[in-house]
Length: 418
Image (cartoon, rainbow, N blue to C red; front, top):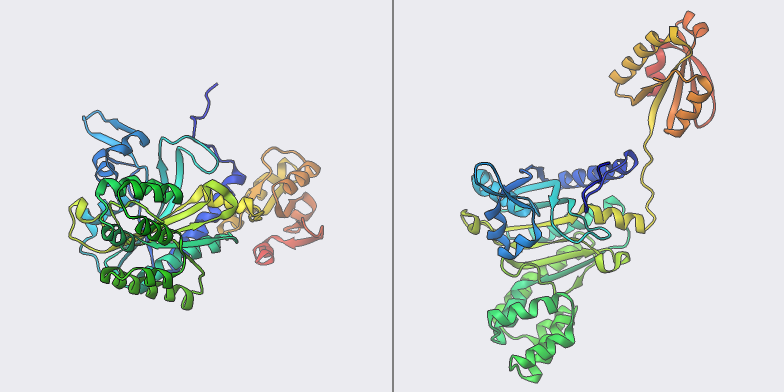
């Protein structure tokens, strides 16, 4: 007997109902914000991903050499393929360019709750604008997608890597020192950060200031502590984005300068959206402004985007007790006997042509068992095609919820269900 590969999943019809529901909500929300869907290949050249993330990503991806000797990789994420697509074919499109995607990705991770080796990701990129309103709308879109999906308990955290980098520069931290601090900042290990700064010969007072800045969510406090003109300018832009989020989109947020997403290519605004109920795996969405276009050979253009963990969103909904819509069948048709099959199939065809979801008894199981089966598949109505009714060009229609039965002319069935 063959078994499913570790870190992958099969999805039952019931599970696919949930996934299709979430995908439909996400797709609809993207479109209401003016985004258009694109699709890229499941595999790309290996160099595309090492150019973006460095050689260390080789440990995390599925890579292979094809029969032509080309080094390829299954995509571990979708931002790099989308920017490759943009540079290759879309640079002359009118700006801003709003693109979204929903697709499977592959990573050689240790499987755990909400994290798999094959997983679905939804996200978007906006290319060609860096106005405050563009960033505010992008963050609002991410929040709205999760809200529309049904997640109730959401926390939006916003940082700014330009501010953080300027603070690092103010304290004259080297590239290696920044790299050492990054994982500590990411994990909010503030005591370790303080002692690391002291080891870097940063004065006690300055180490305290930096550690305090990483923990504060008060923008006025940041403004008061830092007197650097570059930081002041970034703070002004940051404040405008926050004001738009609060006053135009009515979205609450927490300032978190400790968000350190991809310091090599993220620039400026960064954000994360979390579902606190999920504990250590609480992040549902991450994104921000970044610079990848020149790295991939394109003309410099401001870019921002985000990615949402599709599977983790479902886990968050289930943790909150969300009730997914039950799959339903509009009509289940039951031929009373073999002589009724031909006419029953004709009725089924006509109803399907009217876009009703219709199934028919294909096991010749009889009326009693057919009623039980129709109930198990959530059929709304049953049509019983019997000889007596058929003589009058009619059928019996039973409402499975109320139990009410009526006899209807076959020609009027479609009208009855509308």
